[in-house]
Length: 139
Image (cartoon, rainbow, N blue to C red; front, side, top):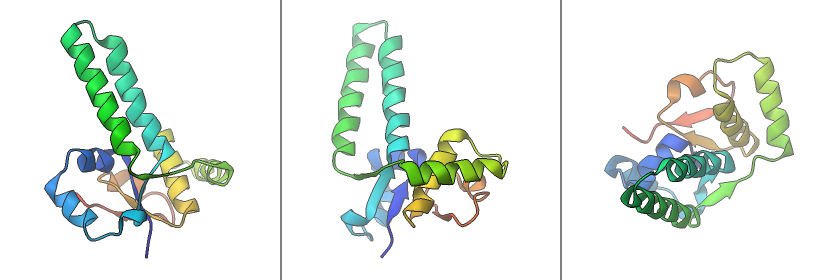
């Protein structure tokens, strides 16, 4: 049994009930599905930006509805911490000068520290991370 950690892009597909991704999800025990707190940060930050930029009542209401839906969804999934071990692992990955964005390195370090599998469509960037197990459930 493995822990499968959704990257931000795949978590979004899960939230949207993408049929291909959901078919993969159904083959895994619910307790083996997770996301990183870094992904939670990315999702919530995006909705906070939408709220700050909303000029019309309809847009503001829409952003609040989506924020609430995101929070309800996240409450149903295991969220793994970006803890001290993951932070140290991330610092080691930075020393390798990989062409991977900061938040993606944090997610990768979290997944590595949990001995988990990263579920992502962003295989091109993440495959640069040594030892990271990756699966693309969007295909």
